[in-house]
Amino acid sequence: MASLKELCIFSRNVTIFLSKSRTQVSVFFTLFFFTLTLLIFIIFFSSPSAVTTKILASRLHSHSFSSIHEFDFVPVSDTHTTSSTVSAPTNFPTKSWIFNVTIQEDDKSCDIFDGEWVQDNDLHPLYKPGSCPFIDNSFNCFKNGRRDTEYLRLKWKPHGCEIPRFDGLKMLKMLKGKRLVFVGDSLNRNMWESLVCALRNSLIDKNKVNEVSGHRQFRSQGFYSFKFKDFKCSIDFIKSPFLVQEWRFSDKAGARRETLRLDTIHGSLTKYHDADIIIFNTGHWWTHQKTQKVNNYFQEGNHVYNRLEVADAYTKALKTWANWVDTTINSTRTRVFFRGYSASHFNLMRDSSLFGRGGQWNSGGNCDGETKPIINETQLGPYPWMMRVLESVISEMKTPVVYLNITKMTDYRKEGHPSIFREAKSKRRPGMFQDCSHWCLPGVPDSWNQLLYATLLQSQQKFSHPK
Ligand SMILES: *[C@@H]1O[C@H](CO)[C@@H](O)[C@H](O)[C@H]1NC(C)=O
Ligand SMILES: *[C@@H]1O[C@H](CO)[C@@H](O)[C@H](O)[C@H]1NC(C)=O
Ligand SMILES: *[C@@H]1O[C@H](CO)[C@@H](O)[C@H](O)[C@H]1NC(C)=O
Ligand SMILES: *[C@@H]1O[C@H](CO)[C@@H](O)[C@H](O)[C@H]1NC(C)=O
Image 1 (tube, helix red, strand yellow):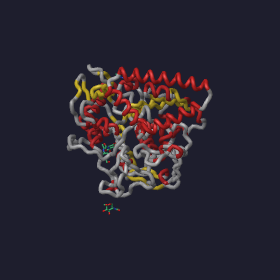
Image 2 (cartoon, protein in one colour):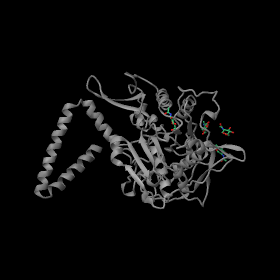
Image 3 (tube, helix red, strand yellow):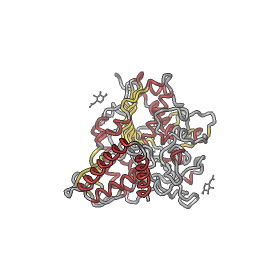
Image 4 (cartoon, helix red, strand yellow):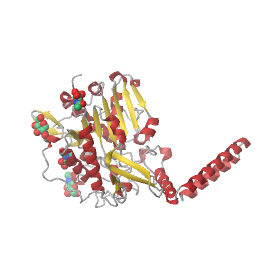
C-alpha cells in the first residue's frame, strides 16, 4: 500500500517535472539515471536480506512517532511490563546508601517523591508555553495547538513537606563554572530541554544562552550542549538509550548484524566522566520490539547469546554501567543521579480491566482527549521491575547515586503527554501514532527539575568543593 502510494507520488512528480522547462528535464533525467545506477549497485553488492531489512527499517522510521525521528527514534511501551525472571531483593537495605533525598522540616524528614499533584491556580509554569526556542516541536504542545491549560497548573506536593520554589538564578549560581550532563534516551532529552528552558527564563538577557554544539554534532556524535555565558556553565545532553554500546558489524558471511554489547559502556560517556553532575536514565528501549528480540541480539565479549531474557540483559547492562561509574567517576568531584522510569499511558480500550491501558505506541495506543490526571491511586500501575533491579544495583555501588524516583508521580499524569499534539495540525492524519510517553513542555519534566533543584539545594554543602 505504502509503496503504491509512493509510486503515485513519484509519477506525479515526474509529470510535474516533465511539464517544466527542457533544462530541468535533462537535469532530472541525469539525476534519475544516476540514482538508478546507484540503486542497482547497492542491490548487487548487498545480500537480499540486508536490503529487505534496510527497507523495513526505513519504513519503521517513517512511522516513528517522535519528531526526534531519524536520529532519536524512541520506541516506547507501557510501564506495566512485568517479569518473573528477576527477583527483587526482599531484605532491602535502608535508604542511606542512596544519597539522601529528603527535606528537613520541623525536625522531620520527608521523601520528596512520595506525594500528590495538587491544583494551584496561581501556579505559573517555569517558562511560558511556546516561549522557549529550544523545545523540540514534538514536545511543544502549545505550538502544535494544545489549548487546555489545567495540566499546567498542577503542583507536586510531597506528603509532609513543601519543596522550595524553583529559582533559576539561584540554580545557575550553584552551577557556576560547572558542567551538568544528561545521559540517556529521549525522556532525558525531555528533562534536559525543560531545565535549559527553565534556567533561560530566569535570565534578563535571554541571548546569553549559547548553543555550543547543535544539531550537526548531534547527528554525527549524539550530543548537544548549551552554555550559559555569564555563569560559565553548560547543560548538555548525550544520547545513549541503553547506556551500553550498540554494535554494528558484518559477520563472516558478510551480512550486517546489530547487537548490544552488555559488557561495554557506551563510548561517548567516556568524554564526560569528569562532569560535575551527571543524570542518567535508561528504560523504554528495553521494552522495545528490537530489544524484545531476545535471540542473537545481546553480546558479551565475543559471545552473542542465542537467547537471553531482557531482564537479564538489562541487569547485566546496569552492572556494566555501575562498574564504570565506580571505577571511572571521581565521586568527590561528580554528583551522580539516576532518573527513574517515566510512566506511559497508551489507552487502547478505555475502562478495560487493564486499567484501560492495553495499547502500545505502535498498535493504536492513544491518550488524546485526556485533560485530568489519575486521582485514584488504585489505578496506578505496579512499580516497574526495571526500577527494582536498578535499586538493587545501586545499593551495591561504591559511588553514592541519587535516585530520582519519579515513576509514581508520573504515573498519575495521563493527561501530560503530547498525544496528537506531537505534530502541528497541518501534519496530523487520522490514525497517526500518538505520543503517550514523552511529555508536553512546559509540563511534567519541569517538576523533575524542581526536585533536582531541591536536591541540589539540600546538598549544596556537600556539593560545593573548595576552588
Ligand atoms: C535522611 O537524613 C536524615 C537526617 O540527615 C535522617 O533523619 C533520615 O533518616 C535519612 N533518610 C533516609 C531515608 O536515609
Ligand atoms: C577527585 O576530585 C577531587 C576534587 O576535585 C580532587 O581533589 C581529587 O584529587 C580527585 N581524586 C582523584 C583520584 O583524582
Ligand atoms: C478507587 O478505585 C477503587 C477500585 O476501582 C474503588 O473501590 C474505590 O472506591 C475508589 N476510591 C475512590 C476514592 O474513588
Ligand atoms: C520509589 O517509589 C516507589 C513508589 O512508587 C516505592 O515503592 C519505592 O520503594 C521507592 N524507592 C526508593 C528507593 O525509595
